[in-house]
Image 1 (cartoon, rainbow, N blue to C red):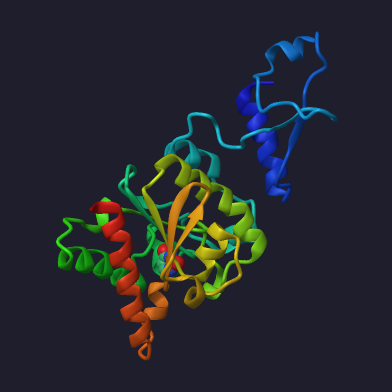
Image 2 (tube, rainbow, N blue to C red):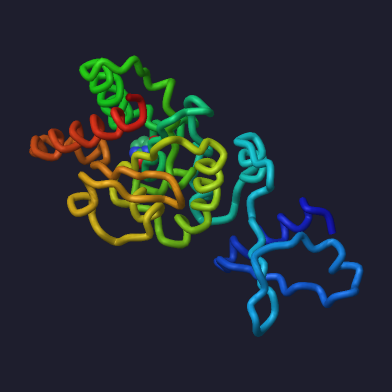
Amino acid sequence: MTEEQLREVLGFYQDLGIKQIYRRAAPPGTAAAADTVPTAPTAAAGPELVVLPLAPVHDTLEKIVQDIGDCKRCRLHERRNKIVFGTGNEQAKLVFVGEGPGADEDEQGMPFVGRAGQLLTQMIEGTARKEGIPLLRKDVYICNVVKCRPPENRTPLPDEMEICGQFLFRQLEVIRPKAICALGSTAAKALLGTKDGVMRLRGKWHQWRDLPVIVTYHPSYLLRPYNQNAKREAWEDLKKVLHFVYD
Ligand code: URA
Protein backbone atom coordinates (compact mmCIF):
# COMPACT_ATOMS: atom_id res chain seq x y z
CA MET A 1 0.00 0.00 0.00
CA THR A 2 1.38 3.43 -0.88
CA GLU A 3 1.55 6.28 1.62
CA GLU A 4 -1.28 8.07 -0.23
CA GLN A 5 -3.53 4.99 -0.17
CA LEU A 6 -2.85 4.54 3.52
CA ARG A 7 -3.77 8.16 4.18
CA GLU A 8 -7.04 7.69 2.34
CA VAL A 9 -7.93 4.63 4.40
CA LEU A 10 -7.06 6.43 7.64
CA GLY A 11 -9.00 9.51 6.53
CA PHE A 12 -12.03 7.28 5.97
CA TYR A 13 -11.86 5.97 9.54
CA GLN A 14 -11.32 9.47 10.88
CA ASP A 15 -14.44 10.67 9.07
CA LEU A 16 -16.31 7.92 10.90
CA GLY A 17 -15.19 9.49 14.15
CA ILE A 18 -12.34 7.10 14.99
CA LYS A 19 -9.76 9.43 16.44
CA GLN A 20 -6.77 7.22 17.15
CA ILE A 21 -5.47 4.38 15.08
CA TYR A 22 -2.60 2.22 16.19
CA ARG A 23 -0.38 -0.07 14.26
CA ARG A 24 1.06 -3.09 15.94
CA ALA A 25 4.73 -3.55 15.10
CA ALA A 26 5.37 -6.28 12.56
CA PRO A 27 6.85 -9.45 14.05
CA PRO A 28 10.65 -9.36 13.96
CA GLY A 29 12.19 -10.94 10.92
CA THR A 30 9.24 -10.29 8.57
CA ALA A 31 9.53 -8.10 5.47
CA ALA A 32 7.17 -5.54 7.01
CA ALA A 33 9.39 -5.29 10.06
CA ALA A 34 12.28 -4.23 7.85
CA ASP A 35 10.16 -1.28 6.64
CA THR A 36 9.17 -0.13 10.09
CA VAL A 37 10.61 3.24 10.99
CA PRO A 38 11.99 3.21 14.54
CA THR A 39 9.61 5.10 16.80
CA ALA A 40 9.07 5.69 20.49
CA PRO A 41 10.67 3.19 22.87
CA THR A 42 8.79 -0.08 23.09
CA ALA A 43 6.89 -0.62 26.29
CA ALA A 44 8.38 -3.37 28.41
CA ALA A 45 5.21 -5.41 28.15
CA GLY A 46 2.73 -5.52 25.30
CA PRO A 47 3.10 -4.68 21.64
CA GLU A 48 4.78 -1.53 20.36
CA LEU A 49 2.16 1.07 19.48
CA VAL A 50 2.76 3.50 16.67
CA VAL A 51 0.38 6.40 16.11
CA LEU A 52 0.13 7.10 12.43
CA PRO A 53 -0.11 10.76 11.43
CA LEU A 54 -3.13 11.47 9.25
CA ALA A 55 -1.52 14.46 7.60
CA PRO A 56 1.08 13.75 4.93
CA VAL A 57 4.64 14.30 6.04
CA HIS A 58 5.22 17.25 3.72
CA ASP A 59 1.78 18.75 3.99
CA THR A 60 0.85 21.96 2.19
CA LEU A 61 -2.25 24.14 2.04
CA GLU A 62 -2.67 23.01 -1.56
CA LYS A 63 -2.74 19.35 -0.52
CA ILE A 64 -5.33 20.14 2.12
CA VAL A 65 -7.53 21.87 -0.46
CA GLN A 66 -7.14 18.82 -2.68
CA ASP A 67 -8.03 16.47 0.16
CA ILE A 68 -11.12 18.51 1.02
CA GLY A 69 -12.12 18.26 -2.63
CA ASP A 70 -15.85 18.48 -3.26
CA CYS A 71 -16.37 17.50 0.37
CA LYS A 72 -19.48 15.57 1.32
CA ARG A 73 -18.18 14.25 4.62
CA CYS A 74 -20.93 15.90 6.67
CA ARG A 75 -24.42 17.32 6.22
CA LEU A 76 -23.13 20.89 5.83
CA HIS A 77 -22.29 20.22 2.20
CA GLU A 78 -25.97 19.89 1.32
CA ARG A 79 -26.72 23.60 1.41
CA ARG A 80 -23.37 25.20 0.81
CA ASN A 81 -22.48 27.23 -2.26
CA LYS A 82 -18.76 27.47 -1.73
CA ILE A 83 -16.26 25.83 0.56
CA VAL A 84 -14.51 28.55 2.54
CA PHE A 85 -10.98 27.32 3.09
CA GLY A 86 -9.09 30.36 4.36
CA THR A 87 -7.27 33.40 3.05
CA GLY A 88 -4.25 35.52 3.79
CA ASN A 89 -0.54 35.11 4.13
CA GLU A 90 0.34 31.42 4.01
CA GLN A 91 3.42 32.15 6.13
CA ALA A 92 1.54 34.34 8.56
CA LYS A 93 2.84 34.72 12.08
CA LEU A 94 -0.71 35.15 13.30
CA VAL A 95 -3.78 33.07 12.40
CA PHE A 96 -7.36 34.00 13.28
CA VAL A 97 -9.83 31.14 13.59
CA GLY A 98 -13.56 31.85 13.38
CA GLU A 99 -16.55 29.54 13.64
CA GLY A 100 -17.85 28.97 10.15
CA PRO A 101 -18.89 30.86 7.03
CA GLY A 102 -21.98 33.04 6.98
CA ALA A 103 -24.09 33.95 3.95
CA ASP A 104 -21.57 36.38 2.42
CA GLU A 105 -18.67 34.00 2.93
CA ASP A 106 -20.66 31.11 1.45
CA GLU A 107 -21.35 33.21 -1.62
CA GLN A 108 -17.80 34.50 -2.08
CA GLY A 109 -15.80 31.51 -0.83
CA MET A 110 -13.75 33.73 1.48
CA PRO A 111 -13.82 33.97 5.27
CA PHE A 112 -14.94 37.05 7.15
CA VAL A 113 -16.11 39.19 4.25
CA GLY A 114 -19.52 40.15 5.69
CA ARG A 115 -20.26 42.64 8.48
CA ALA A 116 -18.37 40.65 11.09
CA GLY A 117 -15.48 40.42 8.67
CA GLN A 118 -15.39 44.16 8.13
CA LEU A 119 -15.26 44.63 11.88
CA LEU A 120 -12.46 42.05 12.13
CA THR A 121 -10.47 43.90 9.46
CA GLN A 122 -10.95 47.18 11.33
CA MET A 123 -9.93 45.56 14.58
CA ILE A 124 -6.75 44.07 13.13
CA GLU A 125 -5.66 47.06 11.09
CA GLY A 126 -6.89 49.74 13.52
CA THR A 127 -5.27 48.16 16.57
CA ALA A 128 -2.03 47.49 14.73
CA ARG A 129 -1.89 51.09 13.49
CA LYS A 130 -2.53 52.51 16.97
CA GLU A 131 0.14 50.27 18.41
CA GLY A 132 2.67 51.25 15.76
CA ILE A 133 2.72 47.79 14.17
CA PRO A 134 2.74 47.85 10.35
CA LEU A 135 0.16 45.15 9.72
CA LEU A 136 -2.68 44.73 7.27
CA ARG A 137 -5.33 42.02 7.11
CA LYS A 138 -3.55 40.43 4.16
CA ASP A 139 -0.51 39.79 6.39
CA VAL A 140 -2.37 37.42 8.71
CA TYR A 141 -4.19 34.21 7.85
CA ILE A 142 -7.92 33.83 8.50
CA CYS A 143 -9.92 30.62 8.50
CA ASN A 144 -12.77 28.86 10.28
CA VAL A 145 -13.42 25.66 12.19
CA VAL A 146 -15.97 24.47 9.63
CA LYS A 147 -15.53 25.25 5.96
CA CYS A 148 -19.19 25.13 4.92
CA ARG A 149 -21.95 27.44 6.10
CA PRO A 150 -24.20 25.93 8.76
CA PRO A 151 -27.89 26.44 7.91
CA GLU A 152 -29.28 29.68 9.35
CA ASN A 153 -25.79 30.31 10.74
CA ARG A 154 -26.39 27.86 13.56
CA THR A 155 -23.45 26.74 15.68
CA PRO A 156 -21.62 23.81 14.09
CA LEU A 157 -22.48 20.45 15.65
CA PRO A 158 -19.82 18.37 17.38
CA ASP A 159 -19.51 15.84 14.53
CA GLU A 160 -19.20 18.65 11.96
CA MET A 161 -16.45 20.26 14.04
CA GLU A 162 -14.75 16.91 14.46
CA ILE A 163 -14.73 16.12 10.76
CA CYS A 164 -13.73 19.58 9.54
CA GLY A 165 -11.40 20.13 12.49
CA GLN A 166 -8.85 17.77 10.94
CA PHE A 167 -8.45 20.21 8.05
CA LEU A 168 -8.16 23.20 10.39
CA PHE A 169 -5.46 21.38 12.35
CA ARG A 170 -3.58 20.60 9.17
CA GLN A 171 -3.80 24.27 8.12
CA LEU A 172 -2.36 25.32 11.46
CA GLU A 173 0.43 22.73 11.29
CA VAL A 174 1.38 23.87 7.79
CA ILE A 175 1.40 27.57 8.66
CA ARG A 176 2.75 27.12 12.18
CA PRO A 177 2.11 30.71 13.22
CA LYS A 178 3.70 32.29 16.25
CA ALA A 179 0.22 32.59 17.77
CA ILE A 180 -3.41 31.75 17.08
CA CYS A 181 -6.35 33.99 17.92
CA ALA A 182 -9.55 32.01 18.51
CA LEU A 183 -12.60 34.13 17.73
CA GLY A 184 -15.47 33.01 19.93
CA SER A 185 -16.31 29.91 21.87
CA THR A 186 -16.66 27.52 18.92
CA ALA A 187 -13.08 28.19 17.82
CA ALA A 188 -11.95 27.93 21.44
CA LYS A 189 -13.75 24.61 21.82
CA ALA A 190 -12.22 23.22 18.64
CA LEU A 191 -8.70 24.26 19.59
CA LEU A 192 -8.69 23.80 23.34
CA GLY A 193 -11.31 21.10 23.76
CA THR A 194 -13.01 23.16 26.45
CA LYS A 195 -16.64 23.99 27.04
CA ASP A 196 -15.72 27.20 28.85
CA GLY A 197 -17.03 30.40 27.39
CA VAL A 198 -14.99 33.33 26.09
CA MET A 199 -15.43 35.37 29.28
CA ARG A 200 -13.63 32.71 31.24
CA LEU A 201 -10.97 31.96 28.61
CA ARG A 202 -10.00 35.43 27.43
CA GLY A 203 -7.17 37.48 28.87
CA LYS A 204 -4.76 34.59 29.28
CA TRP A 205 -2.64 32.36 27.12
CA HIS A 206 -3.63 28.82 26.18
CA GLN A 207 -2.06 26.29 23.87
CA TRP A 208 -3.07 24.30 20.84
CA ARG A 209 -0.42 21.58 20.60
CA ASP A 210 2.73 23.69 21.09
CA LEU A 211 1.32 26.94 19.69
CA PRO A 212 0.14 29.82 21.92
CA VAL A 213 -3.56 30.65 21.69
CA ILE A 214 -5.47 33.76 22.72
CA VAL A 215 -9.24 33.56 22.91
CA THR A 216 -11.36 36.61 22.31
CA TYR A 217 -14.93 37.53 21.44
CA HIS A 218 -16.28 36.73 18.00
CA PRO A 219 -16.75 39.91 15.94
CA SER A 220 -20.47 39.05 15.41
CA TYR A 221 -20.93 39.27 19.16
CA LEU A 222 -19.18 42.63 19.20
CA LEU A 223 -21.57 43.92 16.55
CA ARG A 224 -24.43 43.72 19.02
CA PRO A 225 -25.12 47.21 20.35
CA TYR A 226 -24.84 46.61 24.11
CA ASN A 227 -21.38 45.12 24.25
CA GLN A 228 -19.15 48.07 25.04
CA ASN A 229 -17.28 46.19 27.72
CA ALA A 230 -16.67 43.19 25.48
CA LYS A 231 -15.40 45.52 22.75
CA ARG A 232 -12.87 47.05 25.08
CA GLU A 233 -11.76 43.60 26.19
CA ALA A 234 -11.46 42.36 22.60
CA TRP A 235 -9.20 45.30 21.78
CA GLU A 236 -7.06 44.45 24.80
CA ASP A 237 -6.81 40.82 23.66
CA LEU A 238 -5.81 41.90 20.21
CA LYS A 239 -3.16 44.28 21.50
CA LYS A 240 -1.76 41.47 23.62
CA VAL A 241 -1.48 39.01 20.74
CA LEU A 242 -0.17 41.61 18.27
CA HIS A 243 2.63 42.69 20.60
CA PHE A 244 3.49 39.07 21.37
CA VAL A 245 3.75 38.21 17.69
CA TYR A 246 5.21 41.35 16.14
CA ASP A 247 7.37 43.05 18.81
N1 URA B 1 -18.23 34.25 11.10
C1 URA B 1 -17.26 33.32 11.15
O1 URA B 1 -17.07 32.69 12.17
N2 URA B 1 -16.54 33.12 10.08
C2 URA B 1 -16.69 33.79 8.96
O2 URA B 1 -15.97 33.53 8.02
C3 URA B 1 -17.70 34.78 8.93
C4 URA B 1 -18.46 34.99 9.99
